[in-house]
Structures are given as C-alpha cells and as structure tokens.
Length: 221
Image 1 (cartoon, rainbow, N blue to C red):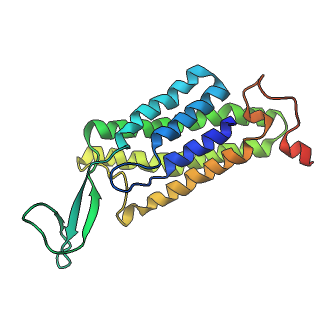
Image 2 (cartoon, helix red, strand yellow):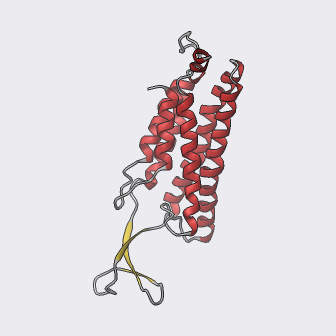
Image 3 (spheres, helix red, strand yellow):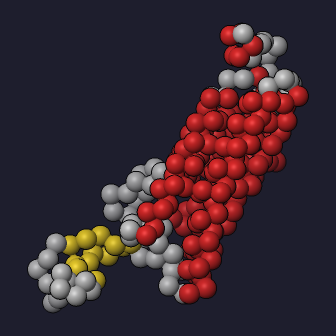
C-alpha cells in the first residue's frame, strides 16, 4: 500500500465513528496505525512514533460507557432507566461524557492529528512544488488546513470548554447544536480524498524509494 493511500484510510477512520452500543466499529486506533505506516514510509521510523502515540491516546474513546434514558414528553427531562423507575416511554442510548484522564487523552490525540497532517503533507508538498507540480502542492496544503480547521480545532475548543465547565465532553455529539461536527467530518474526508488522489505520484514517496517513472499527470500530458 502506498503511504498516502494508507494515510487517506487512516484519516477517514479518525473522522468516522460508528457504534452499535459502546464499541467503535471503525476504531481510531486502526486509523492511527495506518498513519504510523505512512509516516514510516515517508519520513522514517522515528516519525512513526507520533501517530503511534495517537493510537495509544485514542484508546480513551475505543469503548464508551453508556446508559439508557427515557424522555418525559411533557417536561423534556431525561430520566436514566433503572430498576423501579420506568416512565413507559421508548428508551434511548446516551453515552457518558468524557472527563478527567480520558478527556485529556482524547484531547492529546486530537492535537496529534494536526501534527501528523503537517508531518505527512509538509515535505511532500515541497517536493511536488520543486518537481513542477504547484497545483498538487497547493491541494495538499489546503487539504491539511481544512482538516485542522474543520476537524481538529472545533474538537479542541469543545474539549477545553468541557474541561473548564466540568460537564464533560460528548464524544458522539448527538445533540442538534453539535451537529456542526458534520462539517469537521466533511473536512477530514476531503483531506483523505486529496491524499488518495495524490498517492500515486512519485513525490508522494520517500526520496530515494521512488522509481524513475513520470508522474501520472506527466504521462497524461
């Protein structure tokens, strides 16, 4: 697998969250491992330590504690379902908010997302520009910026607010206001798309490992 193709899959796994109950069926840990592979191929083994640290920190959200609630239609109050208390309404799954060490781990993993975007895109964009492909360099940089601005920054703001208020951080973001998080998912998937589209170009390989073949765009031209 080419480095940028692995990185594209890794970013997509970070952006997408699919749970039946508590377990993330599209685990961030796997996404980080793919990013570690890409970093190793592009920058060398020591740089793979950054996404590996992200993999370790992302275990904070691999399995989320949860409870079942019922909503009183007259008051809108959320009532936790427990023995002896049943309003007779449909039950809804609600995840416990992250606090303390788990919140700090999730925030650390989010910060490393921005670091890895720079780590992967920075040298490749420079090589693309030097080899006469400024358009590719610009797309890579814009993709990385979109990922950081739309996906990383909102999560850091939400986590910081949760830490200050003490209310905890809602990982799933399933309330109406928090659906703005979908913008972050779109930004992350756009970045993944850019990585995938540039993955076959010779500058998307570590110097000294690419074959002396023209790029895809050079062959088309």
